[in-house]
Length: 119
Image (tube, rainbow, N blue to C red; front, side, top):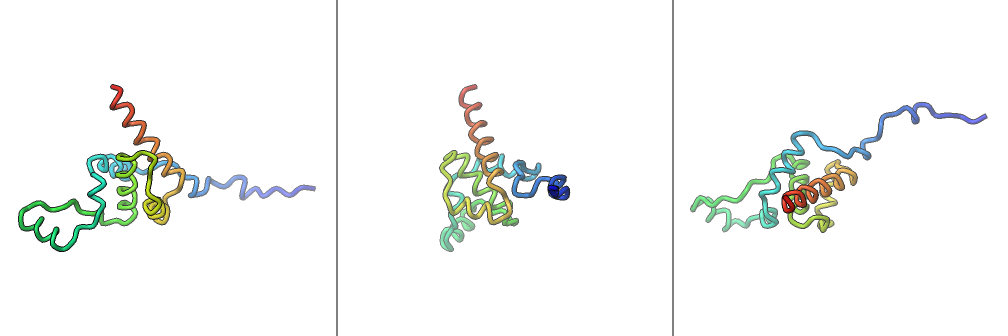
């Protein structure tokens, strides 16, 4: 007689299968469209001092490391589509996002780009 593990069969999908984002996360993705790849580089001391002196401050990183990882990957996706740096992918995944979410992000961003350019 076969044994059925009903706990496993009836369990909700695991967290690694999550494909969507919260409203806040979608906002971060949308705002990342305005950022450039250069915005991801860390500013040096002199650059920050001159920026502060002349009012040319650089964009701040997001305080939440999870949202910052999302923003960084979204900037790359907006600018380069599927050509994502491995370091950014690893940062994204290490913050608890899934590969399925990464695919959703890139497909959504590249789809939005195509609709804007063809319309």
